[in-house]
Image (cartoon, rainbow over all chains, first blue to last red; front, side, top):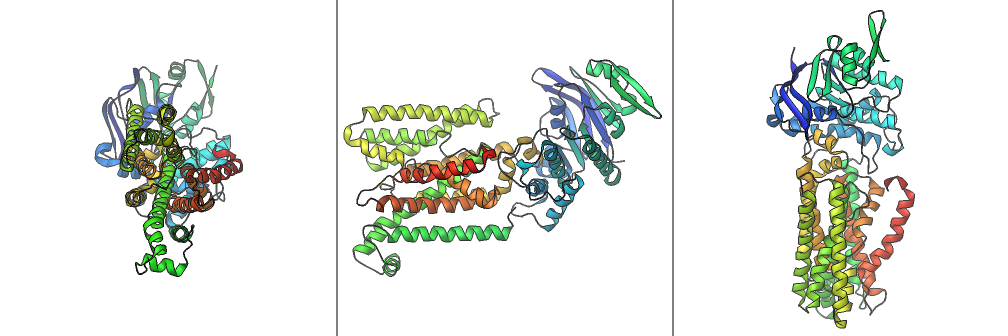
Length: 256
Length: 328
């Protein structure tokens, strides 16, 4: 299997707060990794580091076998996409224009979005259940619709590695499942890699193959999700006791 | 999303409007010039008073007005992108404040016109560098920090301007007030401003799609391959230089830089690839027409053109603001 993301001996700090120390893991094509941790443990910072948008204190991150320095911003943008938390729309824009943003790295300096780009953007909108809203103004959308629009822009970017910071924020239950289903299908069929920050343990168990737990103070645990997640590790992770419920082959965790 | 063809059409239409505004500016005045005479004068074939008035007085002034209107609108659109704030204008970061202090100080000492232009340009650059240096601080200049620094520098310059006005001799006061409100009567050569306008448009067009992304979140723009920090530095310097050249030529003409980008945005959307050249052309046309009004409406008395742009700009802007409450 080919390795999309390779992390070695990574130290990440925010000021004096340690996020990760000596972190190492690999993500192969088609794999889905969930990052779990309490608020303020540095999940977003770690994600930005994995995206090559923030210098690590030590260690290396390589994308498809190359460092971000040798890739450069443009080629990196063709390989990995980032869904940041929170969206800014100071100016008016239509839904289609916003989805087309994902095509930016695919276009030359003087090129304009063509028919193919528009088709890709419309398909991305349809994939997140926003078909037919292309000419709506973004500021008339609800919070959940905007979140799906941001995901559509990421789909239009067509990266090999998706880095998603709380992709389920503002989404209702059916769209949470739909988005995770969509990402899983891309992983299975197109072999993309998924790294996502999640807060729902049970959805992570169902839709991720691996998990990275951030305990704070630089302590981390990474591995296959069934092995990494258990009542003990979760209690240590969230500082709150959890109980496991069995339902056939599935296991669910609920807070006590 | 405008297609490339529609964008070219919009720009062509605005270029024609700009041309029309220049023709009006050349023909209108206390000595009206007929179209045939105008053409003859411009081609250099005609002699006499009318031809001289057109060539020596009206043409440089109209070109200066067009160039400065274009520069201000371009700088305003760039500042709005840079600060990610639709209410920003070219003066929001204290550039006109710095220029005013320089120009008024030169007037205070009774220096000739060249020194007034020089002082204004030096003041504008000093304010730019001051804000840039202070806002950068730890290297991570945020929009808020930049805006706050600019507002404070502008306030400081405002105080200095008030001080100069209060100690200035009576005979200089009128000139100073006209300069502060924007006035094209002493514009001088239009060529520096025209060259700067061409440079500004040529330098921004290749990066216009990157600028579209700059209006979104930094992280999203960077993840799409936009070199955000370098681009913002470049935009800041270019917008500042454009404003400095405009202010040096005409004094601080208000509202063109704020209202024109908004008007254009309402008409054709916020795609910088169309918005920037369109705003430059529309700004040029507006200031040319406003200046023509300023020197004809109460002739032989001349009004400061900044008063007219503000009189037009304020109601238009308030109307826009009530029409689209969400952009505020």
